[in-house]
Length: 104
Image 1: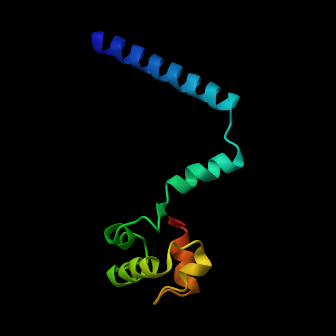
Image 2: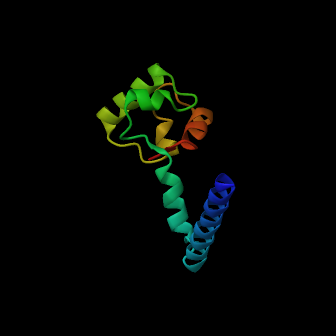
């Protein structure tokens, strides 16, 4: 009986918290630029990433990760997907695939 009562109280609290969060989000929805910034934070910054982090990006192996780091060392930060194609071994198709997972 006590377990059922505790479960009911916990469920009620969870519902109250969810309702409060939903009400707060409704008051101040994210603008498109703010939503984009949140999405970009989930992406790996290609210019600050380590070789190990780059290898975790689909389509990038150790050799291409090293080429990216070497390119950045020699030429400065990569600013966009087009510039990424200047890295040895990265063409348009791979650059498009990588761009889904990284920010510049």
